[in-house]
Amino acid sequence: IFDQRDNDLFYTEMMRGLRAKGEHRIDTTGFRALGVTSAVAEEGKTKTAIQLAVNMASTGRKKVLLMDLDLRKSDIAREMRIGATPGLSEYLTGAVSREEILRITSIRGLYLVPAGKPVSSPVDMLAGEKFRSFLKELRGHFDLLILDTPPILPVPDVLTVSEQLDAFILVFRLSYTPYKLLRQAVDELGTGKIMGVVLNGDEKKSEKYYSRYYGNYYKL
Image (tube, rainbow, N blue to C red; front, side, top):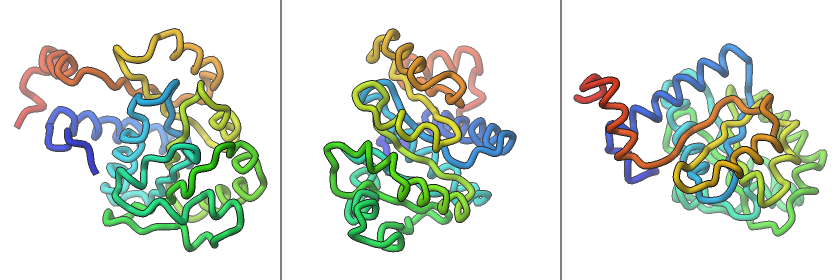
């Protein structure tokens, strides 16, 4: 799963750090449902959601569900090399049961709900009572729900579900997304809904910065 950087120690440590900080905030706030989003597409939100879910489940302390909420353009099924259908869209239309879309992964404690067949306009489905009830039911079965949502600015899907989630992790891709778009996304979502921001950028620059301030501590 995963990312070609998985064997890179710096990247691995950064993801573990994200997990540790995220778990601390979750434990102290009682958050159970987290969205992972970004201002625009191609900022790395899906890989961040996957790695966060994997790292959370791998500790053995939490039963984690990863859900692909990007019903327009899903990526999680491909990234995790599973079939995309049936998925959430089929469940919300009544074509399949809940049990048919819940997948057990190879990682102990990690479960997955793929997006299913792409939907051109899923806003009504996500705002509907069936999705609300499904999310409420999942809260009772899992310690943590991580939902990979669409980006904020291109479509209204995130704002449609924001009240149903406890908080969001916002992924910002350095040297790619203009700051004004990040600011616009924050304004639309609301600062009170943002648990934290993940900076995704130039690994080489980041590693030099990390090494400068922490020396060889993070090296084997």
